[in-house]
Image (cartoon, rainbow, N blue to C red):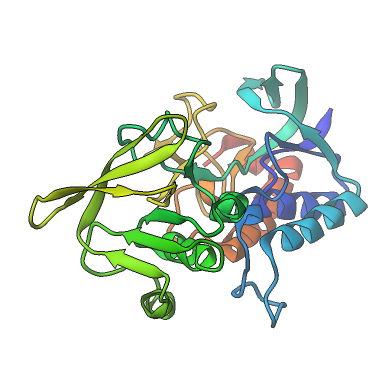
Length: 308
């Protein structure tokens, strides 16, 4: 029996684990993939306080993990398939085992959204990627496409410019949505060729990507381009499908109140899986710390047993 069960080992979940363990609660953190979450796929982080020169995502998350471990957090690598309310207790079920706790904190984050074009699924892992930091090494001196116009797409295009021969950045609008400093930087980088008002229609090849079909939204003109890799950054979607319809959601994101409580008593949500405006490492960390106010009150004060 655990006091606190945390599902998801990204910045939010690891921060919650640190605070829960410091409060003396028996805590288990469950992660399906790599501890650190999406932050581990970030090459370099310059906007997290305390690191004037910046720090790599993997290094920052390693520090989070080690701190939680030192404070006594237990860890379990498995994918939670379902959550069951059993009276005042909460049961998390995976293929390997079941664990029971008094409180559950959902910190499953979000995953890259698929573009939904022909050939995307077929070539996933064979030239289609959603993480340049993870897979960029394989495209040294090659020509690749990056799809998107936000911060993630621009950052990854800049990262790839250190590796690939040429980067074609496809954006469906005629102006980047990325922060101005990033937009200016990408437009000044010689290796990056921005194709405005252009969308990816199809990915073709045999065993690997060979050609992509593009369409200009203004002229309607289509063309094929020889390419060796496609990196897609068109937003994120929450990892909440394992939670049933009894949970209140907006477009899949869990709805919470000011105490980060969901609509079910004893179940909280933090980080990128919940409905909110800003999704950054710093805001995820803030959620991980803030949720403890509600968790402590729930565990100690009957006033909180009614949920939100």
